[in-house]
Structure formats: C-alpha cells, structure tokens
Length: 255
Ligand SMILES: [Zn+2]
Image 1 (cartoon, helix red, strand yellow):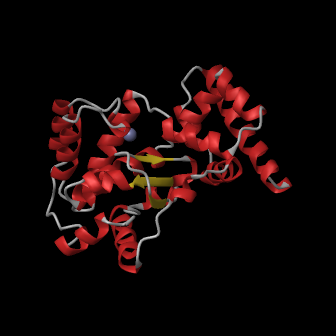
Image 2: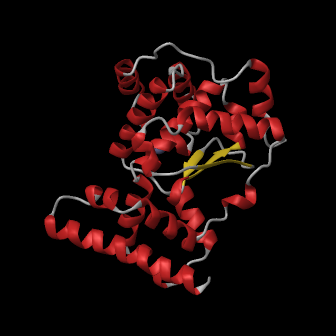
C-alpha cells in the first residue's frame, strides 16, 4: 500500500466515522449521512481496501465484451441522478448462482448465474437490482455498520488483507428494507429502460424452487410482495435486450 493509498484510506475512514458520530448524536439513523458522503470518497476507500474479484474476472471475446457493455449501457446511466455514482461490471468465473456489488460501484455477475438464467431479461433484472444497491449506497452503509462492530474494528486496525475485504463484500448481507428498495429501484430502472420485467419475476421465482436459496435471494421480499411491486412498475413498450443468437453467445462468456 502506498502513502497516498494510506492517506485516502484514513480520509475515507474519517468520513465514515464522522458520519456515524453525527448520526448517533442526531439519532436519525445513518442512511442520510452515508448518502451525503461524496462518491469520490467511496471510490477512494474501495481503492485503498482493495478487491480480489478481478482475479476471477473472465475475459469474453470481442463480441461478448460488447454485449456486456451494451447490457450495462441499457440500464445505466438513465437520468441525472445516475451521474452521482459510477459502475464497473464484470463477469466472474464462479459457478455459484450469484451477483454482488462491492464498494465503489464494482458489480460481479457469476458465471453460474449466466448459465442458470433463461433470458437476457433475467440477467438485466438482477443487474438492475445490484445497480440500485450501488446507487443507494447500501454497500457503504453496510460497511459503516460493520465498522461499529468488534469484527469491523479488528478488520480496519488489524490491517486486513484484500482477500478478507473481498470476502466481506461477497458475504455481506443487506437488510430486508434495503432488499425491498433494491427490488423497487430495479423494477423502476427496467421500466425506464423498456425491458420486460417478467424476467425479473421469473428468475426470482424459479430460483426459490431450488433446494438451496442462492445468496442473491436471501432476505428478498416474498413472491406476492414482488408481484405487487412489479405491478406498480408495469413494463412499457418493451424492447428486447439481445437477439437469441447474442444471448447464446453471452451465456458462454467464461468458456
Ligand atoms: Zn440485493
């Protein structure tokens, strides 16, 4: 770690600790304070803590990389609010059915999720959900909450490795209300992007029938609740995400 990294890590920590202190004093919860932390600080913090997910990142062929870029562009940015954060989406060589976001806007889609998805609309649904976690600063909020625990203090002052931080973000659970917010935000995003939200519902419902509930689904709202939610954001004038041929190619991103 360079001196600059150390300095930015300390500055980032000063921000989050300051935010927590203020929140405790004012008793209004940490959410508004976390959301007021500049994006550049979150990026700086992400950079200084490091991540190891890039090690498992798959490099698709030119066509597959273009399809990933096209999928992300379809969902982000959609309005001025989206300019307040940035994204870095990658496909990783992990067989587990999962997708997850880290500090600083890094989103990983597992190979296992691509393989199990039955349409590009399903992947778009999961991605729209993860983008909302990033935009609403849920990862930073989870990080701040973690800092207030003994484990969090040990991780910061014990000089935790990149591997430990990566595992922390990989396993980090969101609260039920954050998951509901991410589902709502994801559905609103799909609507704006003119993507059919049936894929979003199908994927979550099908995954629930598996004996092992994938991590991406833990603490998510129940089916009925999600259906009610989807009804509030009906699909408008849907346009396909990919052609059948493109989808076939995209699914084999890591092969
Ligand atoms: Zn989620």
